[in-house]
Length: 417
Image 1 (cartoon, helix red, strand yellow):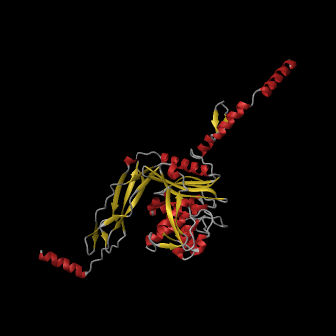
Image 2 (cartoon, rainbow, N blue to C red):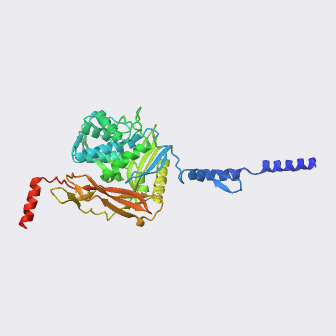
Image 3 (cartoon, rainbow, N blue to C red):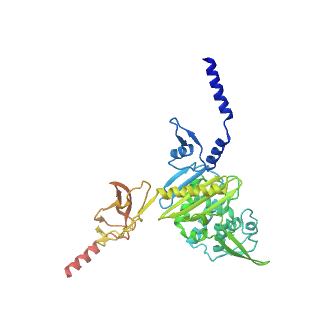
C-alpha cells in the first residue's frame, strides 16, 4: 500500500513539473496589462482583486497617489484619495495666478487691453515658456493665453510684476488668497510652479482654487479651451509668429472638457486640474504625482465619468421673487423682498428630483426699522419629506421707523379723503 501511494505521488509531481508554464504566464500578463489580476475564491469562482479594491472605495479606483473629485456648484466632494497631502503642484500653480489676474480685471485694476512690458527677470524664466524678450510688450489678453494654453512661466512673472510690482509681492497675495479659500495645506514660493523648496499644495486645495476660478470667472474657458493659436513677437529684432499648443490634451480628447490646467516637473511628476461639464453638472478632477502623462489623463477621465454617472443637479427655475412683507411702525406699510441666492441641490442617490417640494415661511408683519439685507424669512426645500436645503428671504430695501410727523401726515391724508 505504501509503495502504491509513493508511485501515485511521484506521478503527480512529474505531471506538475512537465506541465507547460507558458500559457499561465500569458494569461497573467494579459490580465495585468488590463489592470486585473485574479485569484481563486473558496468556492472555486474567480474574483478580480482590482474589483475588490474598487468595492472598498465605493466602486472607483485610480492609480495616482493623490486625487479628488469635486462638484463645482456646491463644492461637494464625490471622491478623494490622500487629498490633503502637500505635494509639489508644478504648473497647476497657475490656477491661482490666473485667479488673481481675473480678480484684478474685475476690480478694474487692470484690463485685457493693457500693455505689459517684459522685464529681464521675467524673460529669464526656464521651463515652459513663450520666449518673451526683455522689453517686449504684450497685452494682458495675450499673456493670459500664453499662461493658460502654453503654461508660459515667463508670461506668469510678467503679469505678476505688472499687478504687484514684483513677483515676491504677488506670491504673498497668492498665499493670502489661498488662506481665504481655506487652502490649509498650501504654500506658494513662486507664481509659475517651477520646483522650489516649500512650494507645495494638495489635491483638495487645488480643487478649491479651481472651483473659485471657474465659478466666479467663467470667461477662463475662453482661454483654456483654445487648442492652437499664434501670438506675435515684436522686438528690436523684428516681428515673428509663435505657435501656442494646449498642454491639456483633454481639450481635444474628452468631449465634456472645459479646462483647466496641467503641470509636470521632476519633483511634481504629472498633475492636472481637469474640469468638465455634462447635462448642467460641472466637475473638477484633480490628479497629483502621476507617473506619466497618460496615467494623469486616464485617471482624470475615470473620475469625471464616475461623477457624471453619479450626479444630477436640481436648480429651482421657478424661484421667482418673494411677495412684499408687511411692516409695522414704518414709513412704508410693506417692504420688497428678495431671495439670498438661487437654490441648487446635488443628488448622488438617483432620487426623483421632480418630487422636490418647497415651503415659504416669513414673519409678518416685521417691526420697523428694516435694513436692506435683513433676514425676514426662509424658502425651504424638501425631498421625500426631508429638508434638503433653503435660501433666506431678505429685505430688498430700507424702511425707516415712522415718527410723529409721519403719523400726522398720514392722519391728514385720511381726513382729506
